Each structure stands twice: as C-alpha cells, then as structure tokens.
Image 1 (cartoon, rainbow, N blue to C red):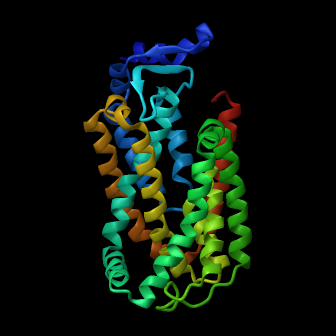
Image 2: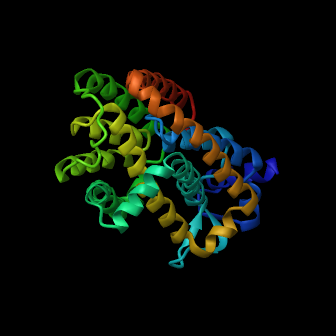
Image 3: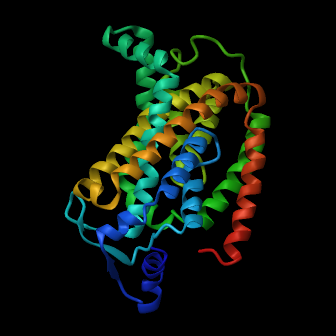
Length: 319
C-alpha cells in the first residue's frame, strides 16, 4: 500500500507528464485514518473562526493524501464527462464532508430551524423577514462560487495561501474586535434585520472563498459590522452556514456524479461524515456561549500563531 501511494505521488515528478492511476487504488488510498482525521478536523473547525478548509488542506498534506493535478484517475468521468484527477478528488471531499457539519447545526438548532420553516409556510411576517435576510446574505457567495469555482480550487487551495490568510485574518480579528460595537442581545435581532444588513453579511462571506479565511469568521464579523450583538451574529452565521454549506457540498457531489462512488469508498466516506457531525455538534454548542462571553480575540491570536507556524513549515520544505 505505501509503495503504491509513493508511486502515485512521485510519478509526475519523475516523468514530467500526466499519468493515470486506477479507481481501485484511489479508493484504497482513502484510509480509515484519513476518514477519522478529516471528519474530526472538519467538525471541530467548521464553525470556529479558524477556517475548516484551511485546516483540512493542511491535514491532507500531513496525511500524504494523493493530490496531484497531473495524475488522472483512469476511466473515471464526472457528470459532464470530464476526467477526474487526484487533486479534484481530494479537494472535493474537503467540501463534501461538510454535510456532517450541516447535520450538526440542524440538530443543535432544530427548534429554530423548524420554527423558521413552519413560520415561512404559514406566512409569518417575522419568519419571512429572517428567511429573506438569509437568502440575501447567501446570494453573493452563490454568484461568486459559480463563476470563480475553478480558479479558486486550482490556484488558492495551497498551504502558503492558507498560512497567509490565517495570519491576516487573525490581525483583522484583533483589530475589529476592539473597534466594532457590542450591543446588548435582544430576542428580535435576527427577525428585525433589513436588506442592507443582510447584504453586508453576504459580501463579508465572500472573503471565505480564500482558504484560511474562515466562513464563520467572515460572517460573524460581517454581522457585527452590520450592528448585531455577538450572540445574534454567531447564530446568524450558523443559520447562513446551513444554506451555504449545503449548496456547496451538494454542488460538489452532484458535479462528480458517476465518479462519486468510484473515487470514495462508501464506508470510510460515510465514517468521515459521521465523525464530522458528532464533533461539529459539540463545537457548535460550545461556540455560542464562548463567543458571547469572550469574543473573537482568542481565535485571532491562534490564527496568527498558526499562520506563522505554517509559513515556517512551508519554507522548511513542504509544498
């Protein structure tokens, strides 16, 4: 197994040309260890303001996940009939595993979500306002994601980008945390949001397309900038994440189409999602209270330290 993986990783470097690997070998490289680590990293970091995608890119590199754009998976085509390479298979699972985190938020906020759905169905005014705010906040990311998805995965999914984004995001967090207003929480904050506040959060969320930025951080800071309290900003970030993450994960899975079961072994792929769901549920329940009490500053310091460590690691020889 280790010899096969070494060949998959080194072949493009040795021969300087595109090579192929079998779908069976690709599934074998998706080990139980990878499923456990990926699920845990996704679950713990998805709703913390530290960037789950950034951490998953780094964990994949540490695990030695085959991710060469020069190695194509033989006889595997996506929904549009395009070949699937190792990099796409690795990067797409980083997004698809978010289904586990989505399930965690549904469970943690079941009353809120079910009340919202029921309210919209019965044309309750407050529920309709919140649903509209969530939709408006989602639209900028939807447009940018559809138009720039290929550029993002091809050019931004790298350790150096993650490191710089972590550090810059940490500095920005510390700066804004000290300057943004912290109004007292009230019961009608979210249902009282206007379109300008929602659009502002949506534009902030677009920053999260840079791996290492963090969707949670961007939307929480955006909501704070729009005038919401810490608690309401965190809750809105979670609810918006349900829509954004579901759309991104579903789109990746749909795009792979017939390639999905050929590159991911069902058992380990589902194991990763299950671990992500359990760990994300714990993280979500802890996160709301912590941010309400402590704010985002501790995460800012963590991001700076993590970014600096990753840059040192990268320039020490990791690509």
